Amino acid sequence: MGPPPDSGPSGTEARYVESRQEVAIYAAAGISLIVLGIVLRTALLNWIAGPAFVVTFVVLANRWLGRGKGARR
Amino acid sequence: MSWAAHELESYFIQKHTKVSVSFLAILIGCLLPDMLTKLPVYGINIGNLALLKADVPFQYHRGWPGVGFTHSLLFGLLVAALVFRFTGSREWFLGLLLGQWAHVLTDVFDSVGTMVFFPFTTQHYTTGMWAYAAQQGRYGDAAAYYSSLGGIWDFMWVVLALTGFRVFSKTYFFRTVVPADPAWGWLRRRFRMSETAMLALYRAFFLYGACRAISWFLWARFVDHAPLDLRWGGPYWVDKVVLPAQTWQSYLGNTLIGITGVALTCYLAWRFILRRWWREAGDRRVRVISAGKAADVPRAGSNPGHD
Image (tube, rainbow over all chains, first blue to last red; front, top):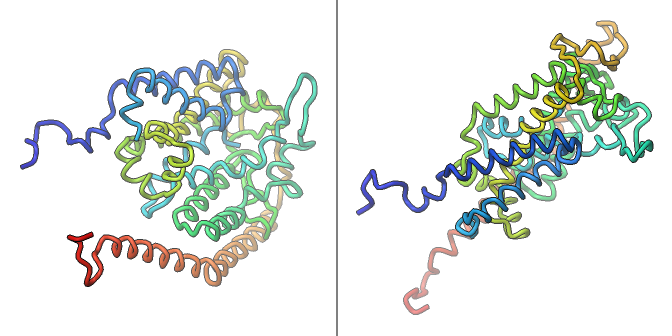
């Protein structure tokens, strides 16, 4: 017998649920990119450094907040 | 030229393409024409020295002679076909083609436009919606672009990408984007990427594109104090590049030659080369799936219980 309908997402589904913390990390990455972009201009606003900054920021923030381990496989 | 649209349109294309297609290929296709050509447009500035700078940026970037052929439909077909030959991936072929063609058509909107039908004609196609001002240097160009309809164009792509916000969800990424493209598995193994990092890489180009547009727009308004001019062909205050006027007869003649040449080349390439590769790619996939199924089924005469 499967779980009752209102018992929350299954294990597989739970992996795909976006937590508020994750959304906040992306928002913080975006705000940092905008502010640093205005100050530093070209350094962060090119197509290699910009996305690399986002990935580094998100991975480090997740690791720092203790969520990286859970997501790593 | 478009500043952030090329990153953002890749998500829009991914969402609206009904067949299986690689997101990474769309993204690389969208970036490809400028990836190969943008550096000499502005040059590298060290103090008062400008290194590697093209003498006439618009001619170099969009014209012929120059590297303007990178902004043509057949260049996209050529690159996609070469990648198809070496990878045998239909998803990458389609993705590169769609992405590069989207870039070519998006750049039609500035005052220089692109040689869409090169090499059959070097005719530029342009709507003149905003000024091409790369000759003003990176900051001059940024100020002009984000003070004109070009900036609005970028924000329109942000909104279009956000209207399909589901493409940014984890579910969409892991159930649609990753299965369509073996490159994600390769990235994961080669660079030991976590799921968090893969998802961040997927979303990064949207965040970068949107933030870049906001950042340059704010810089143009509050740091550079460039006047906003949202009229067609603006901004009025920049010395923009405008191509010499042509007669309608010459324009229509070139267009007819261009459309016929490109359509015929695409047909011949498909008829004699791509169709065979497409079939081979399908056969390869069937063999892989069959081999996978055969590995799951015990051979006749074997006794799984004693293995």
